Image (tube, rainbow, N blue to C red):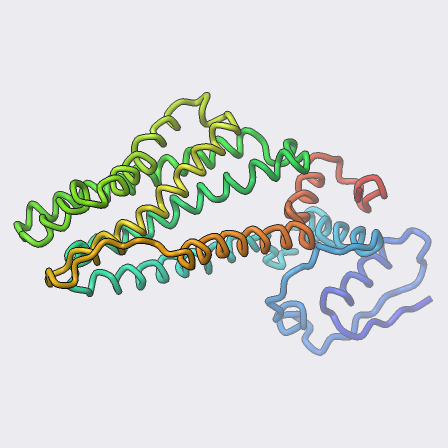
Length: 329
């Protein structure tokens, strides 16, 4: 039996290769492709990705088998069989998300630093805000991951090693935030601007001193416990420290905005902020909205990346081709 295949992309080439590899096939296969070099074939020109998150066993088997073929392409067809297959989806997302995080927080911080309010007019604000965003982000990741790890029995997937690495990153970014606090004080006294010095004195020794010293306690002092390996490997301790850091970062924003605005250049506008019921209700509502959206995410989307789990299964098991039904559970 002779077979003619029109199109030499991934599908056409795969049909030809596996048809010829079938021992029971005794005919010939002809691939009709207008570009004999295959440089202009549809697959070669494509920048698409491979979807792995299917729900039916058949689609899962085909996806896993296709990935195995792409990974072992050179072993199957020789060293020249290179289609530039790269499993870098997360790397691309990180490359897009990192500049977004830096740019957003830099722009917000520059909005503050352009203002002439004492305590805001500082060039350290952009890196200061970015470090703070990373710091609170790692703390939030721990606060969300640890209860979910316990509730859904994910200890085999979110291991103690993962928590320890996250705690180490939180410690590093916390040191950057502490350095920013020190540089902010140093710049005020080194520059000799009496308004900046007065703003710092009001911040740490004025009516909002409890808030400011709570920021130092939550963001600088208590997280130093992460130097201890036993603390970094204890989920309960990490959960408490994550909550402490989140409280401290919220108080830091309160300190920057409220404490600075309470004492500006005009004594007639000086005042003490007292939150109303609606202020507190807005804060509680925003926390509740975030928790609600996170629970919706966990309910309808995979809490753990299925593609990563399949990759781990693929690496741990012998490469036997198609997956069995037990592999897909």
